[in-house]
Image (spheres, helix red, strand yellow):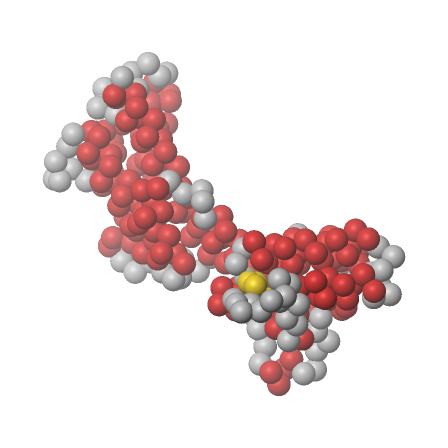
Length: 258
């Protein structure tokens, strides 16, 4: 993809323009070559297609794909036409396009609320939200997913790490007066109630330091001052770190149970 096409794509996805600004720009997938369509990751291609649906007031998913099978730039490249169909299907499967209610044509679609939000938010946010769907530990998902979807990233991280802290305290049998990095140290140190006595000493120390560090970096700052996570990818990975710690606690609970 050349630099101008790449820049035009990200203008439409990352920074939606005003109607006045848009009038001077050539919108539509026709601005991308067939090779460009093949090289774009399917989610990026899908967001461009989604913007195209909005701009062209397209309502039929079959006709949309058919346009490219008949277009001179695409019709001799079946793989590129298939890439367009894949992008449309990706949008449908991710709830950004949906079948029009009450329409007898099963190919009749509309851009959903989530689709319009995706255009505003851009590819980084879309990827971060998708990363969290269906992969978070249940105890983290119930605490953090809603806040994350609302864009409250700091709160999502705070409640995720707080859930980890509460579970460590419960599994270790400590009272509420034990908290923070001191809790992690006493719970996971050599001889601590959550330490694996069969593990090598280095692994015991490493596990303790992992919980200590995650708490100190992700939980402590939010508890004492305003913290801003401007990078949505970093925020999603912080929540996933809490999810990983919770899965480690699942194993520890099973070990303690035996």
